Amino acid sequence: MADLSYVNIFTRDIVALSAFYQQVFGFQEIESIRSPIFRGLDTGKSCIGFNAHEAYELLQLAQFSETSGIKFLLNFDVDTKEAVDKLVPVAIAAGATLIKAPYETYYHWYQAVLLDPERNVFRINNVLL
Image 1 (spheres, rainbow, N blue to C red):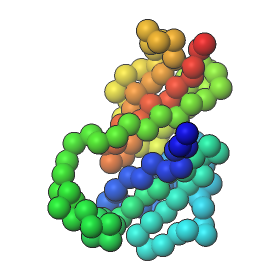
Image 2: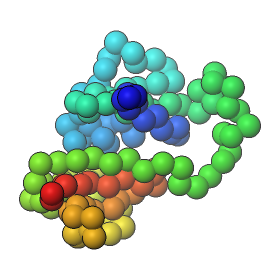
Image 3: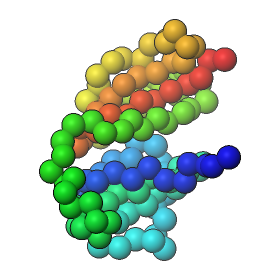
């Protein structure tokens, strides 16, 4: 079985967007892999990579660099419903936009749906099962 190691985000500002996720969730930067076009954060179970637009060319993805729209959904699990409720205003204060306030899903998760400052979708979840 494969494990998810990274979710990479192509971003206009690798410093600001990685700082947003550090501020909201307390993730630590993996300084050993820092470069002018990349920042990485350790989430504890996997990592988030932030790629500058120059990485499109590096990865031979230049033809997709102007593609717009939501292309991924980041999910951050927390230990309690109260932690979801606590982190939502922290995220909003850091520049997030609340799309759907915390609620219980039909699949027994308590979650909120937000957009980060670059309008990427993320959820803050507590699995109730």
